[in-house]
Image 1: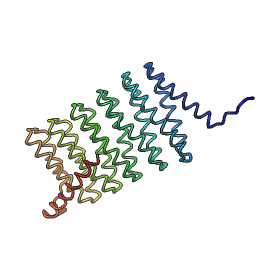
Image 2 (image 1 turned 135 degrees about the horizontal axis):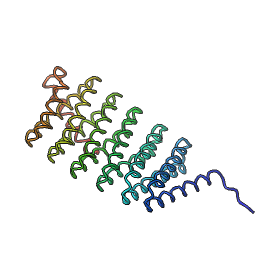
Image 3 (image 1 turned 120 degrees about the vertical axis):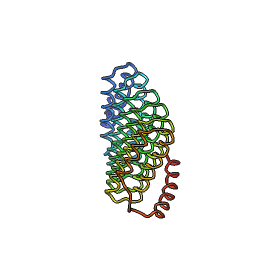
Image 4 (image 1 turned 180 degrees about the vertical axis):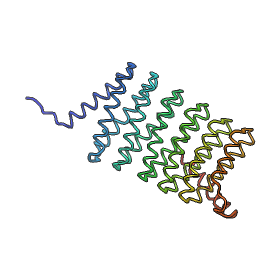
Length: 307
């Protein structure tokens, strides 16, 4: 007697074969084959996301997402940066699709793997792959802002903070500048959607990164932070978020003073120019400014502990 195979079983077999093929191609150093396998796995995941969110469906999608991440790690060992970059973008696409379908646990899982891959790529000195993963985090963060999904925005910001700090520590300036810029873009996107908490998180994290860059005497990353804060300040001022504008001005002044102490004339000049471009005169009186700064500093500590 023969046995019928249901469409579900066939799909599961196809997914397993695609995962096996992806690992086989990655371990053999076959770039084209690895990229094709990763794209196929993305297709399976995108087909499953709109279906009923039962336990089996959830496990199937997570298995696909984890496999893409593991194939990316093998690709990193094989120095196939293009395959690493594609994997990061694919996971970002899956996360955004899941977020759009209100599948938050899937979105978080995919984003977390992108973040861990970005850190791994940066640690291995794979600049192009790390920058691509950072870009994926930035794209996701901006997408979540449009959807007003604050938990996911916060997670994207936290990973970009970690990547930026690692890059500053290891003098991976290209990756650091990229991660800082994408973090600033998430802040701007959040400001456009009037999401005050996420906007404030971005500005607080940028201040911390600016301080870290100055301590490492890294002028290019310091200037990237200053530019990101200036862009964020411009957007915030247009949206009327006075409290956050005070925080941004405070951040720029702290970075300026630290840069002055370190003898970083270029960064000091850039911070001064940024402060002048987002002039806060007349927004709040001196006493109100001090009170707001105290509140912001408390929030600052909370955000950095959370990250």
